[in-house]
Image (cartoon, rainbow, N blue to C red):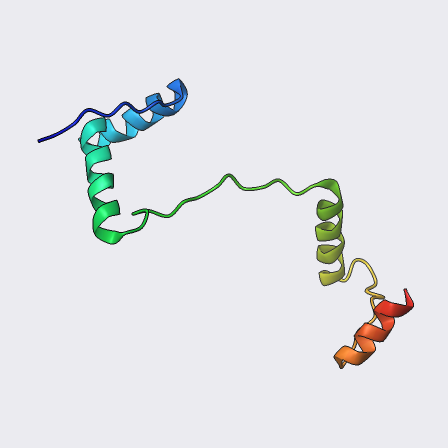
Length: 95
């Protein structure tokens, strides 16, 4: 026995998904059934979930550029260095 399920997808997402499924020779229904069966068998989402990469904000971008410049010797690295945690903590408390 089977039952009908309605899935709402953004039109653009559906179009892109259908294009990939067509290339793989799968129907949308076959894909969702396959994914559902794997979820039940594996007891987890059967694929890696990715997100869009985050674009660094201006502060992070500047810090990354400065770190690269220091690595390349273009900018003097006058950052303090420490050989133990106590000295690091003391320095942080002073600032």
